[in-house]
Length: 144
Image (cartoon, rainbow, N blue to C red; front, top):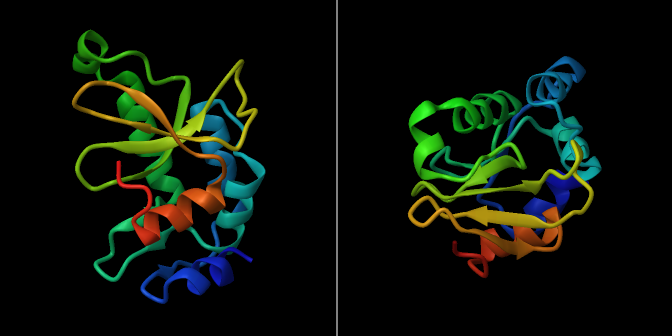
C-alpha cells in the first residue's frame, strides 16, 4: 500500500527492504512509545523511503532511534530548547527542521504531524495524517 501510494505521487523515491519485527520493536523499546499504526505499516513494507539523492523522506528505523535519542539526551539542547520527549521524529527537511508525531501520556493519540523549527524551537502542525504529510512534502505543499 505505502510503496504504491508514494510511487503514485512520484517515481523519484526508492524503498529499502521491509523492517524486521525486531527493528520496529527496537523503536518502542528505546523510545518508550508505540509506533502509530500507519508508520508501523509503512515500516512493514520498507525500512525508509529515499529520494534520488539518497536523502530520506521517511527515516529508517535505526535513524528514528538514533536521532530521537540524540535530541532527548544531548545536554546542550536542554538549555536552549523545550524538551523533545513529547515528539517522535521520523523525517527532516535537510536543513535542521524535523517532523514527527506528538506523544501524549506515553502514546501517539492522533495522526497529526508536527514540524519542529530548529531556529526558534517552534512546534507547528503541518498535516493531519502520514499520507497528507508524504504527499505535501513530495509536491512541495509542505515546505517547513
